[in-house]
Length: 98
Image (cartoon, rainbow, N blue to C red):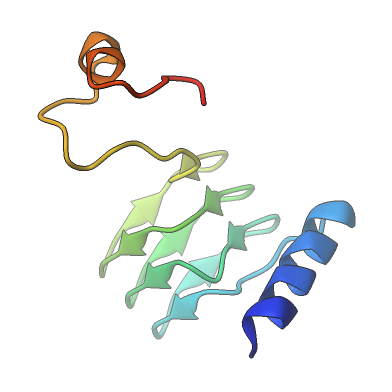
């Protein structure tokens, strides 16, 4: 799928509140209702996802159980700093809420 097509589908899912499994998913996983696994996520085998779980840009291994109403990976932070503490990020010149 082309990058422009992926973008279109992602925007369409957001506009229509469409949930689903779009990432790379292994075998024998159990997904309850309302689960959203985005296309930048990799899921291993034999995992359980409770209702209304949202996973964005994450790697989930094997045999994990994720409780209902959990959100994984919604934010982004610099990976080159020693800490994600607010004062460290601000002193490095990065805005915390950019």
